[in-house]
Image 1 (cartoon, rainbow, N blue to C red):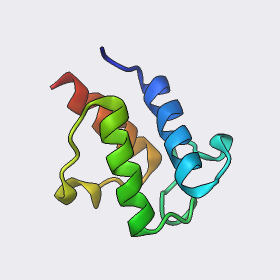
Image 2 (cartoon, helix red, strand yellow):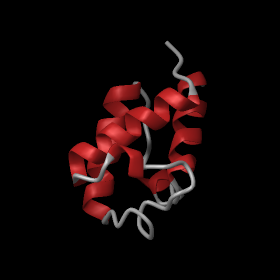
Image 3 (tube, rainbow, N blue to C red):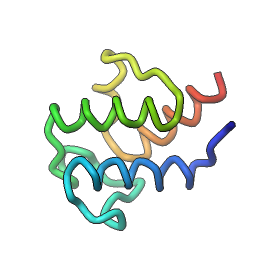
Image 4 (tube, helix red, strand yellow):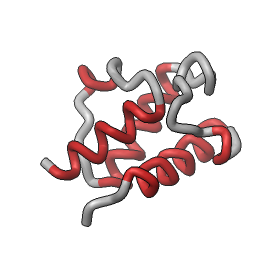
Length: 83
């Protein structure tokens, strides 16, 4: 089942909320994981693992460094899901 961008964004917001306690509303597409949301590398890896489970995609460790903003992650997951 393909997820829409909005569904992926909402799902990521839930995952970030569970990992960091940040409000779901704070997780917006244009925000940077590190600069705006203050997510460290360990939390980011947990978020990636949970996103892989939730959306049924694989995000190789080498690609995680390219996921700078929430939108980067949304685009990656939508694209990986269609592959």
